[in-house]
Image 1 (cartoon, rainbow, N blue to C red):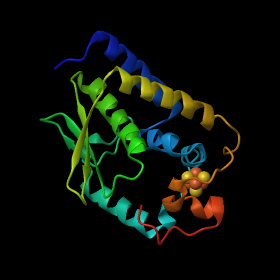
Image 2: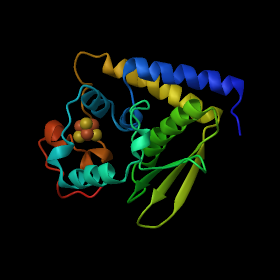
Image 3: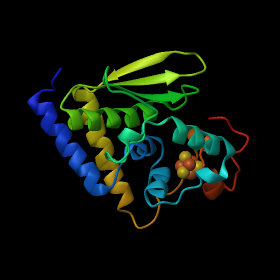
Image 4: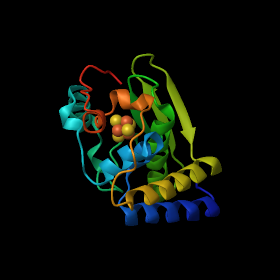
Length: 188
Ligand code: SF4
């Protein structure tokens, strides 16, 4: 199914803004989780290699991601079904689902613009084997636009926004940097 002209124009503008800023899928997850994390990741201050759970995740991701997708707006989704036009993220639990959906919707937007066809996003949970499907409707497009505007504002700051303790800190790879805490014993 082809997307509407209005949606198509909005998506092209969104992707152009994202590309100009240097934002990619993870940026949309981070800005939904924590502005401090969004700033640190955007400015390449990564600590994921210090966390053994994230080391495993990075390794699994490298092995499973579809190489065809790399180079397209820096996309690196877990699974791409070109025939069904579905892009998937695979997670253990439903923690911080809204942020994952934000990232997934950006993948859907990029693939929709790149192919001129309608795509869907799928969240797949390995523990429960449940799946949830997400379409790129007007509300989703507005959410992405607002996220990008928020990200743009945050990353222009000369230093990271003040950290604030929140539930996501428990499994965040920046916990060592922000709070002097190791995240190696957390499974988020
Ligand atoms: S530890 Fe908490 S405050 Fe620091 S970047 Fe992570 S989520 Fe944000």
